[in-house]
Length: 130
Image (cartoon, rainbow, N blue to C red; front, top):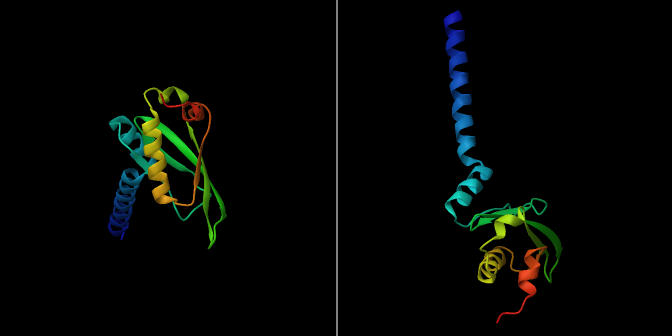
């Protein structure tokens, strides 16, 4: 009887180990850090949950966007997104074209949204193109 109990406990431990490994590889924060170190674009978003913020990485800079719900002609949609950089020091090397790329990616997911950049990114957007 004791042998069966130990086998059952070992089986439970193995299941928990496999579950932990799967959760580790599916963790969105880990994927964001990998994209940040690889200098690529990656976005973590739950389109069905308007209270959960958007997080994305572009050119090793971590951005976060706050979604706000409003009304459109037909339904309630995300109508406003406020984007800010988590660390302003990471913005070095980001150009207007990069910001336009980010806006395009967000507008593909949220076509009714108005994108607002917070300080210091809004200073780059407001300057004129020479």
